[in-house]
Image (cartoon, rainbow, N blue to C red; front, side, top):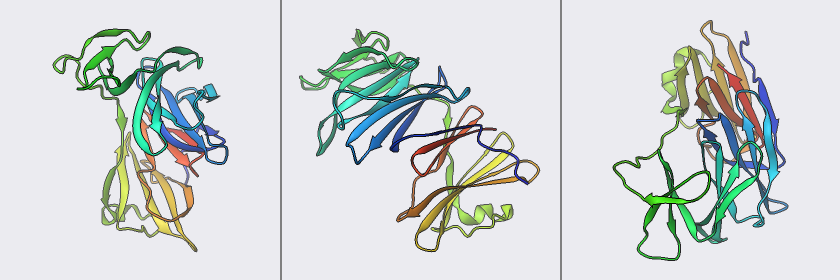
Length: 253
């Protein structure tokens, strides 16, 4: 008997390439790419309420831009140096609630996120010197200090990759392909994502099994030519997964 269904769903006009979750605001930030139009856009969705804060947000750079990080209500974006190089340049800060541009710096680049804010460096000077920036204003607070500016870690839980034999007792009615599955136990639920061989290609499924043995089976992807990475993440009591690479499903566990 099915026991849990997505209480938030949102489909986008393009493939979701990357997502980040802001621990402070519970906002889900997404990078969405429309290959046909060569347009990258960004969206903000609250995973507790389902409110879409904004979507279809774009930069002047149509394609060579991406999502960097999210922290304390601010979404950080970047540009790329070129179409052939993955090197990032520029830092653009966006208010997660409104989509308003808070600040931008086109001579700096993002290095990583610390407990005291984003760590950035000038792209104009070598060797690279790191600074801690104020997330709200972009002001350089001081030089980076590894002792006090420790790396920020959020509360996202990702599943473990385990041998398919580890879930034999769950009696899942699909034969896993590839010899492994992604699995996690959370709030009394057992959650599995796996690939299986379809008629013409691989398919990817998500199974949510509750304490009473109730099972929710979700077909996430079809027409897959190779094994995909983990299909879901957990944040606090929310399970977040992507369907057909274009739709966000959020379950409350």
